[in-house]
Length: 311
Ligand SMILES: [Zn+2]
Ligand SMILES: [Zn+2]
Image (cartoon, rainbow, N blue to C red; front, side, top):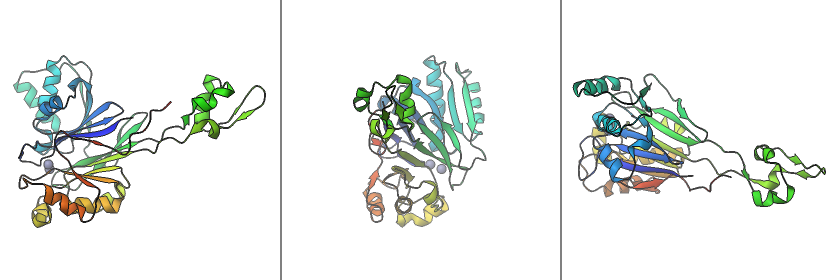
């Protein structure tokens, strides 16, 4: 089951050195979730081979321009492509004011339904789930209301081992029950143990997207043991004062959260235009958390280990 994050933009508010403002595509099991939508997102989607028609869920962390100025472009291009399926938008509700004005001025009417799921006032809550994954908000500590998003796979049923089971002539309707742990008794009275014909499911994987935030130790508990942690690292320690004033983090802050929360891997991003060379940020993070990567525009990162398909 695919679980990956493609970074479309790794820049903070002023795009620089070819880095676009914030946007990512989380691909879980070929379902695409667009996370933040900075200026140029639709071009980046195109460049990275993501068809806009495959995006049904858009998550906006907060209403600073570098996280949503690309939204009207994505939404109206979907219109031009004749979209009729609804788009679910998870955001602070004030975003609707902006979209309304832009559509009105351009005398454009959407051909599809735009369904807003307001984040206003939400604490840490599940805002989306399907059979295999759930997405939870992570309230952050920024100058305006801001949320990160935690993607956690659900624990699946045990895997059915059809080769091992072949000799028992197990009726089809018993397979889900065996996967749920129930044993099966054949017509001749033989007991087929669930444990003998099923295997442990893969360990659920998780991805945390920590958007703009001041250093916040409450995250340690809230993003505990994720496989991949994206944590903004707008600055380095030399600019610690500036980070505090603007409610942003340093690379060292990000690495400290990664280390203390037990993350398996850390992805840095949301880089200030101060940094042409990002190596100092990486080096700083690695002083406390070695398994750190610099996120780069157009690169995809796997969450945890790819797992075999379920039977
Ligand atoms: Zn930002
Ligand atoms: Zn911001």
